[in-house]
Image (cartoon, rainbow, N blue to C red):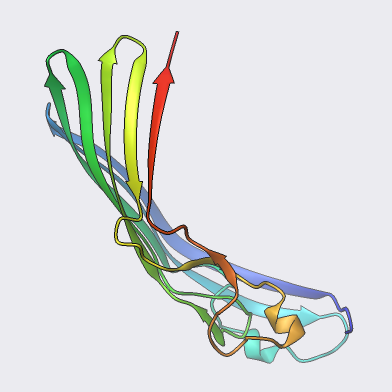
Length: 174
């Protein structure tokens, strides 16, 4: 294995936005979106090795879009403030290597939850994460290209998103 330094020049042009809309007292909609074009402008190796295969490619592990949207029903039941919500979250296709040969596929998750405040300072919450039990990798193997392992096709090594799970919690503020 030989270590060498590389300088990667990149440009990302994009748009980020957030929304928090409450059209009526019993409904709110929040969300965020990032739409971008992450591009490698040039790659220079300090050893003189060619890195032309990386030029004009997508920056590693950077999706062209990340979007979340959360509609919620807000209610009051016998003096308890409550909020029932669903959140959709999607991440676009990414690559784990600079030549864009190894794909980190896009994925989408769906969460659902309920928050109730039965008294001043107390909040109870139940959250079902990744309800559809989607699969996806948040990161690939950053060393795959250097090791020449798993650099073609879909990435098979990386940090996975968590599967379906249910969490209950209590919060008390004083």
